Amino acid sequence: MWSTMSLRLIGAAAALVLLAGCSTTIAGIPTAAGRDATSTSSDPTPTTETSGPTGTSESDRGTGELNCEGDNVVAPEGQPFCFDAPEGFTPDEVTIDNQAGSAASYSTGLSLTPRDLIVISVYELSLDSDDLSDRELINALSAVIEQLAEQGFDFTATEPQVREVDGARAFYYTGNDATGLFSDTYFIFRGRTELQINCQWETMMTEVLNGCDDIRASLQISG
Image 1 (spheres, rainbow, N blue to C red):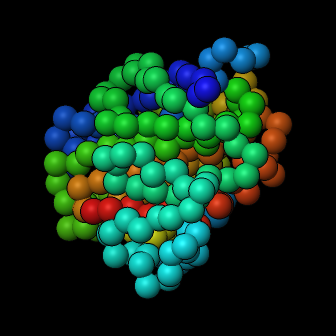
Image 2 (image 1 turned 120 degrees about the vertical axis):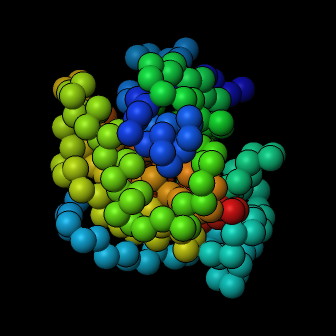
């Protein structure tokens, strides 16, 4: 049986131009209920990270079409993504404790412990992100980063690295908070879809980061 995680999200009013009422968000401190409780550039250069999921050829990736197969595939019905579940992680339903801005249209999670987990959230955009430059997207995300910094989240850098996930642009931030939680967060854009991956750990850094790598390597995003 899946447990439920309560996920605190912080909205960004400055992103409303991009999202037209559905503000970009970044995870605060996810916790699994029912259980005990890194370089930057001012002009980012994309780096490519590719690896196909089980039963999927490289030619299927980056096309905006989903083609995931296998016993360990996570492919929620009606959602614009699929990926291979990392070994050892438990799937978790996610509820949103939305403190500002708009909630994700869909969220799901995979956890090792209540504070060592990965959360995937979907945001529907009113504009086609493919028409926007890296800088325009980074500027839209900057309000999110500023809000979290004001609330005590310490970012390694406020300027993200720009990467590729399934051929889509991904903006990568790292940081930690005063409670001892660390987070690697990816904002991935394709067309009118924004997918956010929040990889959070307290004690199981290696396992969470390896799981995060596995998800990004196998992730497919429609758009």
